[in-house]
Length: 581
Image (cartoon, rainbow, N blue to C red):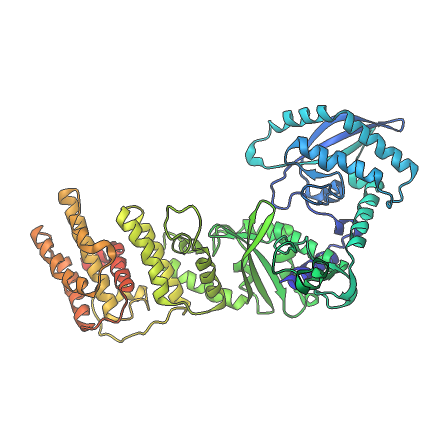
């Protein structure tokens, strides 16, 4: 995965012809959450710089070099005085004023007397106006709606009609490079083989790029847990570090999507080598305006919660693979939930073909991974935490990698959620719809083993054909039709009495084979009592009886599977009415 991210960084640096400064910088607004730029503005008069106030402007991606942002430790100074604001009192002190104090005391930056004088002037103005800056900031920030996100703070300099930002002044670029060099010199541990490019170079410990890699927890330190030996876990050269940083930044900004509410990063890996990438593929992954256009022009969702680019990628040949990195972020910490590697475009095509079949059967609402989510997220809807999330990610992995799914395990989780909603009498139809779509989707991907039994043609064959090969056994058809007949009874009862007491006979959908065998005559008897056993219901009962008898005495399905096919019939009763009448 890291090799793929580094390759993305290499492509961006080469194709965009990034200069040495731009490669060092970070985008202050990669996720669109820092749209408001507050500029601490100075007016230059006769060589003196006077603080004049805060000027508010909108974020402009073309000004990334001007903003000159490079973050540092969470509770320490950045590499420039540009910063994202948490609380203005702390941010101004730690990220801005302390930056100037630190730089002025730094001996290894080789600053000239003129440069030191300039920095002292700016620091003095900021320090003397600190309280004014805080009050002005708080007043301006109240005008910004909370939904517009955070505020980014930087410096701006004016002289007559000329305006300059940090990145326009050579001194700040010089200091940025100097501070980075000092940091890297401290980090260089040895001359060894880089873990990414495999070349013999001066290497450092590869921490700080992704926060899920750390040396302060067991499992990350080699050599008997000696911290000075930790670099051996992940030695990395300076060139690869820069490419990794650029690749990560681009992925977080342009190639991050959501699937069933979970954020994932889409990381391409080019099998034939990055030098052979076709221009249209390059545009999909690296041309930001083109990428935005593709997202906006997507008329429907495919697998995720929002427009993604998977459908476009599925049209190409297998000269690239995709990695899906599911990350969980809490504050500044990152945790890998799942990494699904080496998914081919041809596999995506197969997945979308299966999805299209489901969408044709259920025309009103398209299938996405969101339909699977309720069954593999929480063991109980009332729980606060997603205690089954690993099951969901395992199912997603199996879908992308064409690995079989255990039918018993799947139906156990489907029926668990269905029973909960059946007992509560809430969202029952929606949950069963999701279960049917999910089950049919996985069957069409050949992830669930189905044993098709040849049966003679009957009246409901056109209906069952729509859901092929779901109803591959006479028992499944019989249970389905029994469920539909039972649903017709419940509706009659509710219409006549305002309640449906026959639901108690269904035992919370935990029925066994003997219960189903005795259920059909009970349903028929009740319908006759209500004088509602018309020709359509008689036909339904006749077909249900035929298939149940054809199934024989020994039923090969688990209790979960028996109840699943029964509840499918209950839910799809309306679909059968055109065949019944």
